[in-house]
Length: 210
Image (cartoon, rainbow, N blue to C red; front, side, top):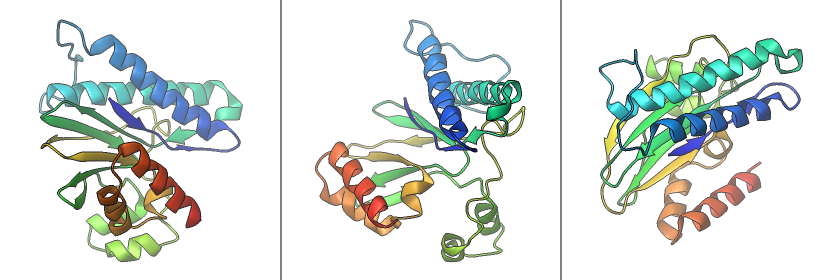
């Protein structure tokens, strides 16, 4: 299980929301995964794979926790967070996300985005109104159209992908992707021998870029 959450909201509330998201997803996973019997949530979309239904359930549970906490504590009102999560084994993985944190697959020197941003500019790109390059320069790119905690119910995008030997999976918030372009990310992943060194280098590049 891999998870990245990027919080938003005044004061410390964004940090509260992102921490609540990761902790809730982890707790759900510990209860439902790894046992002798495959646990599948009731009422989930039957078109999804078993892992897809599990991930969707974890993320919707996190949404409920954040939404209710925001309503219960005035200082946390309006808080929210993005989330991108992966369940993987040696052969395949399932990706689920809400917001503009992303999942990438690095395979044989090529970096491929596996998620589409739930943002105003992301929606404009999908509708053919602006180009990807225009979106990367837009001053509207921080406006999210979906986030955990914003509404009582949330729509989660879920997809399944095969994995091959040598593949690397990258999860990142917009703090990386808006500062370091895809080509530089791919070069770094090609060059660095370990995941930890690649992560350290990417963070350093993002900080250097602002």
